[in-house]
Image 1 (tube, rainbow, N blue to C red):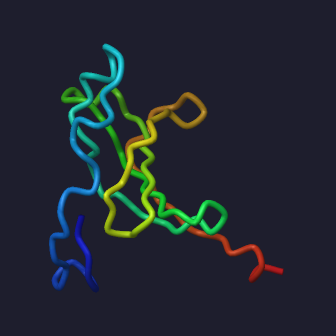
Image 2: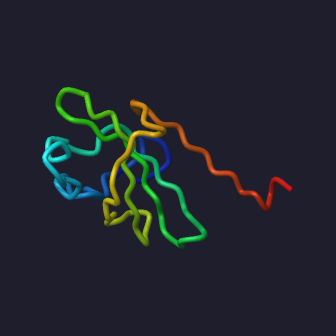
Image 3: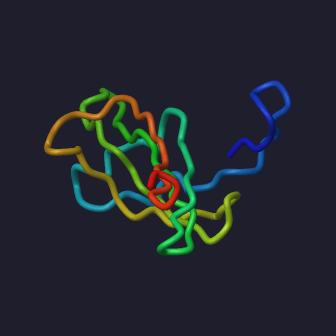
Length: 104
């Protein structure tokens, strides 16, 4: 996990999710690792940081969203699973946080 202001000044903080921690079942055992740029948001309701990531296999056929949680932003994160949103492939993610109390 990288931490810092921008990519130029970021420093490696270690591996937030163990690479094999998400392997369950025959099909999911082929998933190689959380890939892509993981994004972390604070969940006020659960008081946990939630990491969203792209998870795929070596052939890019899994195309799933992975979710992990941690009490600290730098982890370590516990992998909670992966899914395909509404049954569709997921190749990239963009997240935003809505603070409903500020929307009014």
